[in-house]
Structure formats: C-alpha cells, structure tokens
Length: 168
Image (tube, rainbow, N blue to C red):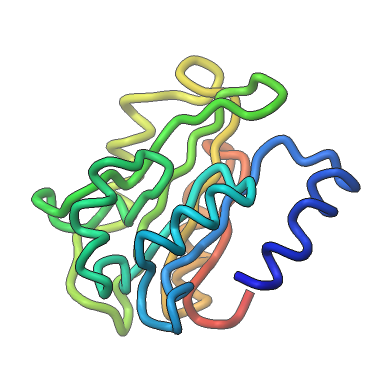
C-alpha cells in the first residue's frame, strides 16, 4: 500500500494511464483486505480491485463487497458468494473496460471450472459490443494453469494477468 501511494500518481501521469487494476487480496497485513484499506486503495486512483482466495479473510469484506462494485472476487466462486466476479468500468479515456477474475483449481480450494466460467461470461457479453477491452486476472497457484487459461482466452480478451503465486 505504501508503494502504491508513493508511485501510482507518478505512474498515472508519466505513462498516461487510463485504467488501473490492483490485486489487493492480501493488502491488510498479508491477510485479506479490510474496508479501510480498500477505500484508501480506491482513493489513490485504482479503478478496480481484484481479490482471490483470501477475499473474505477479513469478515467485513463479506458485506462491503456488496456495496462497492469496484471490488471483484473470482467468477468461479460459489454462486452464493457475495459480490461479483466481473465488472464493466469506464476508463478515463471513455473506454468501457471489462475486468473479470477466475481462480485456478490446482492446489487451491475446490471451485467451479475457470474455463467454463469465462466461456459463460464471454458468451453473454462480447468485446466490441458490451465493452471495448477486457482484462482477466487469473488467480492461481500454478503458472502452467495461468498459461493454459491465457492461451484459452487468446483472441477473446485484451489481456490475461496472473496473480497469487508470487511469480509473474
């Protein structure tokens, strides 16, 4: 959070960033994300926060995620999980940006299939129609699973980014 506060304003200006996504699943002392820290990250100029397997380690996020659409959790969580696994946001340049997140299954808790989950979402909304660009955060342990999902989504989304395993 300190690095974000220090560097994001400079990076926004220097790189002329229109949209910023941050994975903040462990921004609260390495154990999830609390409401105060979520608010401060958004106030710094982050447009969308993704979470992950620690999405609800801070219990207050169970209700806050329902009130704050700029915070998303994996699409393939249980259908009864609070919050959303995707959002369409307006970038500073006016573009409609889809941000979605799926969680891998290898060495993780049992979840719905991330490939099927993304297929369902992308069959309902298509790039160029419902949104102008699409960013997908693949929150997974195995780099190979992230790469497989990236290959699977090739040509259907603008960018696939891997989070969680401490390996970019």
